[in-house]
Image (tube, rainbow over all chains, first blue to last red; front, side, top):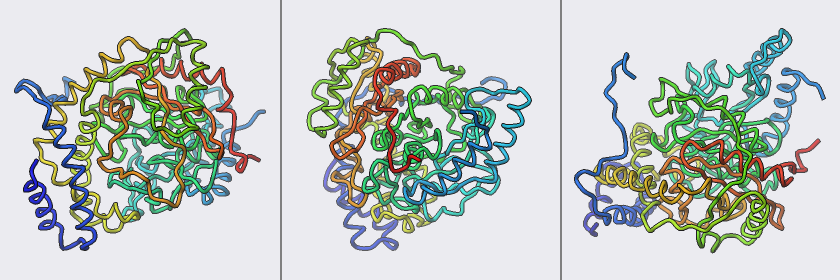
Length: 66
Length: 446
């Protein structure tokens, strides 16, 4: 995660929702990105293999086979 | 003392009317529906039809469970104060089938805390108090469920937990709160905060009651594909247990919490072997937090896009949803990929043990009029909550004593998936050897 990624996230929030947020709220959002980025950095630091699948099960639906 | 379902419902409704406003724990009293259900239960019992231990017993629902008949389901949020559904949540239906009487929709933190609240005043019904001290918070997000049970306004209530929302009010209100295994109870008709983390569970006076209620509300449901296919029945095991405590977990916790926990351990040593364990280093909290944030951003996308957050009660909730809307899909999926490893770690660490014990919370109830000392969104420091919720593990919190201020402290028993009978057994045996659960807040005793 780089500063530019944080800037990009903040700019995108501002672009999408800036018209409904006050300056104080925008400043709080910018601050709240730091701990969020820390969490994402932790996740990205763990190596994964191509075979590591998301832990969720998708089951194709058929009424007679549940 | 003999009584009847209608007498019980009337008593409960009168107490909700009298004490609900003092505690800020009630949203809607469902009097008409309650009296109809109570009369039906009375007729059934008179004619010899007995549906079990909950037949004719009043209960309260966290106000995120859909209820038909024009009863509002507000999700604790001002902009949704008039929201109504034309169907009942599966849990509501199951309790009706068990003969229970729905007397109230109970207060909750707005959107179950999904906007990142950082203070008790984050509900359109106001901050909810613990019956042990009106100057202190009930905990949340199942605030009213904990408070109303503790004050004896309802014999039991249903709450929900995504991360801490049953155990927190269990701790602050001094009641038993059971977070079941993910999938044990159908979520159909409950507000979604995080589809793969949300669980519904009971808050009661004691562990034994939690078992009875869980039996009534659990089981497969075709409307919720996450439900476990087998029906569960309450059969607590009374035997010697092997339990674990996390190394260094008591460090930094409140003095009364630690002191009461150590006393509880002395009681547990009478029928449990206790060993110290460690979870290996892993970003447990980051994984669970990222899943919660990604799913909450999606679950409340429409709410957020409509700009409804600006009408929420807590100022921080009015901008809370925007930052997390920037979590990338690949990061959310990375968290889900890491989740499987986390579940395997939890399995390996917990496999030799019947339960892991810890204080239900590191603190006693927070002052009702002050912001939380630590930033909650993305906050670190709760490995039991992160692993427990991220891996879908059951846990029950019960009262372990009081602080010098008279505030409750709690102990939790977290088990392996689907081991509710084991953790209920340990908690039940603990309560048979102590009398904390027999103590009630004097202010609400008559």
